[in-house]
Every structure is written in structure tokens, then in C-alpha cells.
Image (cartoon, helix red, strand yellow):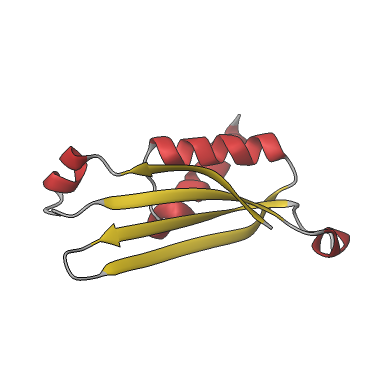
Length: 107
């Protein structure tokens, strides 16, 4: 099951610097894996990021889902907040999660 967590539009200044003139919305969802999946000893929570580009003649949607991220709901929500604050897109989420997991190991 997927539940809405938060959304944001990428800042106009950021888009302008990248040469993009159309709005881009990012939506962040928390995935709650059903009991069947938990019995298979996989993580209970995951994330889903949806990027929607409102171009002049079309709407482009891109998404990335990480189904099994953690059994700790608070950590998943912290990660979702971090992703939102940094306007992380679906294409960049894997790199960010790798960095976050490395920092968690070091602490």
C-alpha cells in the first residue's frame, strides 16, 4: 500500500539555472508492505518518488520505487523529509540513499 507523504515544486531559481522553463512537481510516498511480504523477511517500509514535468504540449511523469527500505518507519520518514528538502528526483534517489546509508554506518 502506498500513502502520500509530501510534495513540492522545484524552485524556479533552480529550474532557471538548469535552463528549464516549465514547472516540475515532486511527490513523495511511503510504501507500507503488506503482511505477505513481511512474512518473507523483507523490510516493512519503502518509498516512491514521482516527478511530473508540466511541459508546454505534454505532461511527462517519471517515478522510482524502492519497495523494501527499512523496518523502521521513523527512519523512512526522515529519509523522505531529506529527499523533499533537497528536491531529490527519481533519477537521483539511489545515489542519495547510498550516501545516507554510508553516513549511518559511520555514525
